[in-house]
Image (cartoon, rainbow, N blue to C red; front, side, top):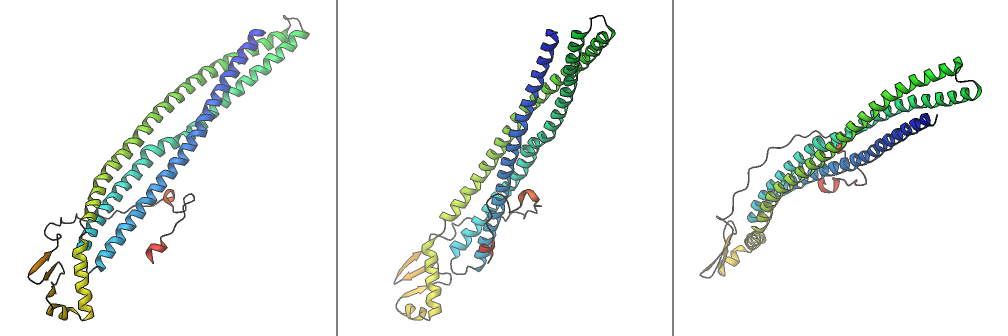
Length: 302
């Protein structure tokens, strides 16, 4: 009977190994899904805040009348910054489809594996009970008795069943492990590629934003502002009489016989076309009530 005990012990070890493996995958893949889901939600919120910032910049340029250089450059800045949010939107959608959803499948896969392991455990529990029953009968009755013969036959039948279950479990665990490894490789590769593509494209348009900010001609805008201020104060005429005059745009100032010209003007690069507005349905994944970040847009929209 020692061989019977060894067989049962080996199968117990097989079941425990499978249970431990599935439990580990279920635990950590669940953590991966929670964390990546939070990353995607944060990226979606960052996208929306970026859209809001670009919108407010455009609103500001519509009200700006005295700083032509700033107005043109901010329009260009807002358009390029809005384009970055278009790429961020693509990043969010691809992360959800190619990274998060494949990992979320493991909730159901682990559930199915645990059900399979449970079925095997039930079969092997029946075999262990039959082994114990046979040992007791052999201690009380001769080996040739009908009860012992029947118990031995039942044990052999159960061993065949558990053998089939055992082979099936080994096959299923092997497929599960191979799929897990392949999916992890694929998911991490997709994650890195998506992030690299977004940041590469974002860097291009951030460079355009930087250039637009650097092209703001503060001196020309100050000249224009001062001209408007003097005109509003009724002092423009007296300054004209003393030899200082402002053009209608404020971009050139004449002092005596010399001319001070702004570096801003014909060299200003035209603004980029405004991107087509995005219509993005926002599901519960992108709800603003995510995690501990609960800031509101009220301060920006007032």
